[in-house]
Image (cartoon, rainbow, N blue to C red; front, top):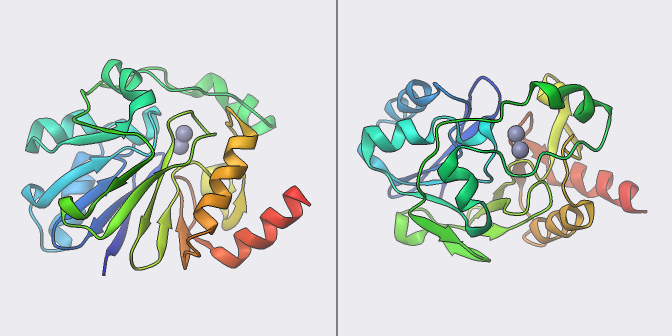
Length: 226
Ligand SMILES: [Zn+2]
Ligand SMILES: [Zn+2]
C-alpha cells in the first residue's frame, strides 16, 4: 500500500509517496526543500529515505526545489525524455494559454529556475517498484509534451497539471475538475485523461487544488467532450 502525503508549496502541490521507501512527485516552487524535509520528518523519515524525485513536467512551479534537494541528498531525478533539456537548463516546457486565466497569468510565469541534470529518462512508462513504491509512471502529454502521471497500486492517481482543481490555481472550489489554464495540445490532454481514468483511480491528486473525486472527473469530462 502506498501512502500519499500532499505538500503545499507556494504555487503547486508536491506529493510524497511512501511505501518501503519514499518517492517525491514534484518539488514545488523554489525554496520548498524545507517543507519537503519537514513532511518527511513528520512521516518519521529522513531525507535519505527518498529514492527518487519524479517530475510530472518541467514547469518552474513543479521543479523549483529539485536542484536543492538533489544537492542535499544526491537523490536521482526522473523526467520524461522530451523535457530533459528544459529541466537541465532551468527552462519551462511549453506554456500555452487556452483561456482568460491563462492569458492573465502568463506574464507572471517565471521563465527560469535552478536547472538539474536528470538521472532517469521516462519514455512511455516507468515502474517505481525498484524505488520502493508500488506505483507506475505513465506518459500523459498535453499540458506539456513530456507531462506524466503516477498511478499507485492502492488505486490513486497523481496527474500533475493534466487536470486542474478549482479556480485561481485551487484557491476556489479546489475539488472541482477543470482543464489547466495552459494546454499545449488539448487532444493529447483528453487522451491523457482517458488513460488515467482507465485505471479507475479512487482519487486524482493534481498540481493545483484537488484532490478530485474520480466520479466528479468522469461527469465533468463527459460534459466537456459530449
Ligand atoms: Zn504546469
Ligand atoms: Zn503547475
